[in-house]
Amino acid sequence: MSGGSIFWIASYPKSGNTWVRCLLDSLLHGGEPPRLDKLIETCPNGALRSWLEAFFDVPCAEMTPAEILLLRAAVYGHLGQAGAPPCYIKLHDCHDPALIPPQASAGVVYVLRDPRDVAPSWADFMGRGLDETIGLMARPNFTLGRSKPRYHHQAEQVMGSWSENVTSWLEQQDMPVLLLRYEEMMAEPQREAARLADFLGLKADDEMIAKAVAACSFDQLRRKEEAEGFSERPDSVARFFRQGKAGAWSENLSQAQASRIEADHGELMQRLGYAPSGE
Amino acid sequence: MSDSSDTAHGDFLLCGWRVRSELPLPELLSWNGDPKTPVTVTIRSGELPDRLENAVNPGNHLMMVSPDGDVLLHIPGLVKILVVGGHSVTVQVLRSGDEGWRLFLLGSALAYLCHQRRLLPLHAACLVVGGKAIALVGPSGYGKSTLALALSRCGHHLLSDDVTVLSPATESGAKPLILPAYPRLKLWRDSVQNFGEQPDSFRRVRDDLDKFDLCGLGDFDPTPHPLDGVMLLAKGKKTALEPVAKPLATVQLFQQISRLKTAKCLGRQQYLFAQCGAIAGAVPVWQLTRSDDFADLPALVELVEGRDHL
Image (cartoon, rainbow over the protein chains, first blue to last red):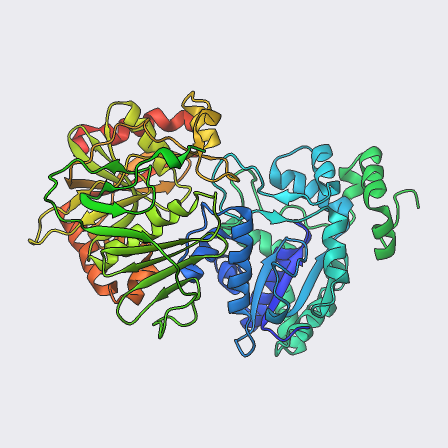
């Protein structure tokens, strides 16, 4: 059941979500370069406390996770009601109908990336070790932001393991899914951007799509970040747009680390066409 | 959690008001003033509707404002609070045994009372530093309470944490008056630990949060004070204190008004903007830049204490 106006841009972290948001911003503005400082308006992070608070003018810094879930569902339900203009919200949560009201949803763009490439990128982003990160990616019901000893600008998000996150979105029946693979976006950006525009119902001809793709190439995004900064970059890392490669895991992971990810997520990886390292 | 059943309900002191409550309010000081002083605010327990009739903001079903200026707040699963006329508060607790509802009474509902009474509630902690009352203004997560505790530990009196209530001056160029709220500081675990305290020896503000109520640690002064200066907290790599020009200070103060959207629904936007301008004209406003590193806290305290700024 879908009939709402929210398109979710969902993914596990470091899978290309921001890249898709950049493409979206560009496609919505005639293929112009994406406005990094406006992504928060074009496609806000649905767990951002300041955004959630501003919506109903209800403070959430001292809400329990259960209360925040109700608040988030209320915000989404309101934003996505039938007849409202389309809007786009970034999520890293697993699909959960209690959080994501089916009646508010128009569809989901799920951005998928080889978990062996996710691991080094996410480890770097969090400032954690690779082995620890690989462990988090396998942890059932893993919740981002739980038990934080300090204020966190994002509400806690039940991301699940990598497998749980992917499965929850690809197998839900509440709304149509567009699966975008990081690897294919690298290899065939024009085709994948056209699929994105088509799914979202954006009026974009080939020329505009080509313009958006060029404006959102990894090099352009990196240059833009260097020139203008990016508010979503945590202080702990030098740059948000880090490597922008597909398949670099063979250089970044030890064989044991790659094997561990394959053991943790092998069944789903195989189904999705991510071949084991031995093949 | 502290057992609230042993707390006498009755009359309390909040922002200089005599508050009569049917519900326990252990965060507030008891009222010890003149017994003839009339009760300013009454807090009752009662059933509340889900919606307000003809709300001026019909799209919002968690914070509703009626054409008469009544405000109904609904925190799903926890509490509903109705604030009427700047003097009457009705509370319906939706989950018994969870005292977290008082955070919303002493936060949002206090801000609604202020807006209805044409007072100015700011996201700010406030202390008397060297005889001068300074508001440390900033959104959640900017270190207001941590800096307030650090200053409090250096002997400076706490006037408020989280919400600072200002009574605007009636004469042009005069300073607004700070109405001290209640003696509480709420700090997250790593901040409490930084002060060498054991977090678990304090009450958690919510069972599910790693944030603690350091009630009693700060030295609270309930006397109203004229505001002498404002420091707008900003995050950065280095500690710094720089003056902010009046136009920018006005806008930044306005953005830090507690429950601003509600105030707009109450038609207070222009009034509040003018009051922020008046404050920026009457007292110096600085930007206080701080890093996330606790090791920089003493330098930050020194900056706030710097007499030449005051």
